[in-house]
Amino acid sequence: MKIDVVQEFMALASLNSPSRKEAVVAEYLIEKLKGMGLEVQVDDSAPRSGSDTGNLIVRLPGTAPGPTILLCAHMDTVGPTDGMKPVLRDGVITSNGETVLGADDKAGIAIILAALADLLADRPPHGPVEVAFTVQEEIGLFGSKGLTSELKADFGYVLDGDGEVGTVNHQAPSKVDLDFVVEGKAAHAGMCPEEGINAIVAAAGAIARLRVGRLDAQTTSNVGTISGGNARNIVPDRAEVAIEVRSTDRDRLEREVQAVLDAFHQAAMASGARVSVKREVPFEMFTIAETHPAVAGVFKAARSLGIEPRLRASGGGMDANVFNSKGLPCVGLGIGLEEPHSPTERIQVSQLEAGVRLVKAILAESLYR
Image (cartoon, rainbow, N blue to C red; front, side):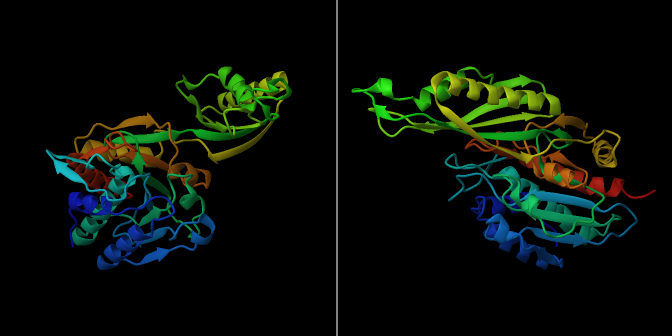
């Protein structure tokens, strides 16, 4: 059974699967994969992750000696995708403009499915293949973090990377989330404002001291949300601020995090407010060397197809961050997404088709010679 990658992607994109609600895609994939003669394992991570399904694991035995290779894509999308109708026009697939397309990462799923179908139908030489379809990638990589099935792969590819097909995301940053609570003192804004301590103003003073945006080639910082106050005529006694810092340089990351912490503590001290902070690290950085088989294999495979490969550092986190932290070397593969997470998200048909060819070539070129 062959799979048309374009039709497959459009069918997947039509399924509404926000984070924690991936079961509709999981059920679709289970039926599709079983129809291909493959056994599908659903892990028991759902009670811990909060999703309505577990991660899916599929294993395809090798037909020739070679390393076991992991292919991974995630089943959830950012919203909104409810009622999404993909539109194919002039070789480009878009949404109808009212929702995101969800090519992040249903394009990755479609490419994997089409490649598996070709392997089963044509029986070319390839090593063992493991496939993971994960949940809740978009809101914190919770599916890959909570994966309960033991993966046996030697290295792997996450089809969720930046760039065109042939791009290897060999590096991605660590991210530190800082959630601040600034506590002041409430008072009537007109009758006795001098008795209050304005938590929003204290928070704004801290924010004004920060450097945000791209700080250097490896480091970014962002103030994501700020909230507080109860009414216009009350001096606000509480403000909450969500900030993140990312970097592929561990020392620089710590310096920037400390600069944010110092700014808030200094602003609180100056105003008489109190500040508390919760620090979390959703994912850790990784760098895979160009000489590693996971990277070298892509370069060789891409060139065999007439595609010029390129290395690229990603600014985002992906399931590859988690797999690398668990000791499984993984890189991200670019699949040609354009403007993901927006109503203008799109992907070219040629990129979907090239993605299938590249995955098959990677498996062929990785065999032991």
